[in-house]
Each structure stands twice: as C-alpha cells, then as structure tokens.
Image (cartoon, rainbow, N blue to C red; front, side, top):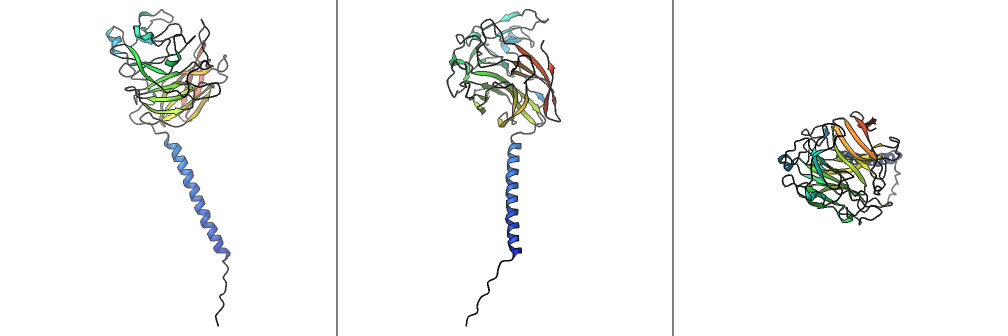
Length: 334
C-alpha cells in the first residue's frame, strides 16, 4: 500500500524571501540604469585640459602676412559693415569717431557681396561669409551657405567650403551662414547656418569645421543660432550661441578636440533687457576670463530697409564660477 505524500504549502516567509530578492534585483537594475544615464550626460562635458586657460579662446588670431608686408601692424582692423561691400583693412583710428586711414581692399574681396564679421586663425588666414543686407542682388541665394577664405600670404579671397542645406534658401528666409567663431585651443572653426529654415521649420545647424581642408568634424542639427563664441570653464569647454528665434543664449559642451557633444543647455534670457523688445544675441564676445559682451539686435529673418541700419545694444555680463552662471551687469551702449 503506497503512502500518500503530504503536500507542503510554501511558507509565507519563503514567499516574502522571493519578493525581497526580486525587489532587490529591481532596485539594482534601476540604480544601474540611473547611473548609466548620469554617466552619459556627465560624459558630454570633459574637465578642462591642463593645457587650456580659463576664458576666451581667440588669443592666437594673427594679422595676415600680406598685411604685415604692406606695412600694417598688429593693431590693423579687418572690417565689414552694412554700407560697403566686401572686406577692407585699415589702420586703427587713434580717436573715437575718426575716419579710417590707409584703407585697402583687394579686388577679390567684393566677389561675395556684403559680408559678415570675419575671424582669423593663428596663421592670419581670414574666414568670412556672405551677409545679405538690403536685397539678394549682391548676395545670390546660392552663395549664402559658402565660407570664403582670404589667404594669409597671397591676400586673395576664394571659396573655401559650401555647407549642406536641408532645403533651398527662399524669399521667406534669405540667410545662410549667420555666425563664425574660431577656437585657438583646438584650431576649430565653428559655423552657424539657418539656410532652409522657415517660419514653421527650424532646420539650421552648427558645424565644427577643419580650417585646413573644410572637412565637417561635428555638428548640432535642427537649431537656428548665431553669435557663436567658445569659452573655457574649469568644468570644460562650451560653445555659446544666441537663438535666432528667441531672446535667449544657450551653450553646448565641447570635448578636448573641439567636437560638439551632448545636448545644448539654456544659459539666460534677454527678455526685458533693452527698449527694443525681443533683441537677439547677434554676437557674443569674451573680453576677459570672466566677462561676456552680448550684442543684442532685432532679427526676424528679413532684410533691413534700404538706407537704414540695425539698432544694436552691447550688454556686459560677469561669470560666477561657483554657480556656473552669467550675471547681467548693464548696457555698454548709449
């Protein structure tokens, strides 16, 4: 006669033990996931290299060799403005408001029409881009996304590289490249373009360009920006820029090679700063290790009226390294 086996019911303690085990596994998994996310976002910003100095990064920009051979010194000014086509070079005035003297313009410097603010590299090469003013007659749409280079030795300007555009430039937005910056630490050229963007589509981009061959090294897509400038913090390098659609300044992390890393972050709003209302950060300059100058101006994706100039205001900000924020000090413009 076979014996009946007694069914043993699992004890409540055993069930509790299983719940504890699975709960522990879940907590560990969540912890690992959160740690991975934190490490991922922290990895987008590298601590500043010991070979880099805190502050701005334009210390190496040099006067072109051709200009030095012509008798200009290191104080010479290479200028573009809203009333003259192309690029000019002249001696720095000794007094405010003084008419420039010893003005020179190579014949090739007007081929791209009106130009944006130029930037130099450590060899004295000049990089510049078209900037349509009143009409597209002198600035054809097909040239608006092209960077031009003035050779430091020959002094001649030629096309350097044409950046890709998601959509053709239209009358709704006649602009292409709207910002240039150079980083002496990494020898990187940064370019902002809003080519192809419309009132409803933001498809601009910021590119890191190799100034030797025009190769694209990294990029930040789907953002309309200008006013580019690089600043070194102890926590790492960041590329600062103004938004073309909002009165805000943002930044994005750069690694030790100047590559754009991670997502951009909000820095500060310019709403209420000036009397013009919705001024945009058209230009950003780092004057000292803790000073930023923001040039605010109106921008609505349209050309200025004939005979007029854009009103602009310069604002001074100080950097607070403890809070890692920029604090407005006031206006520098009258």
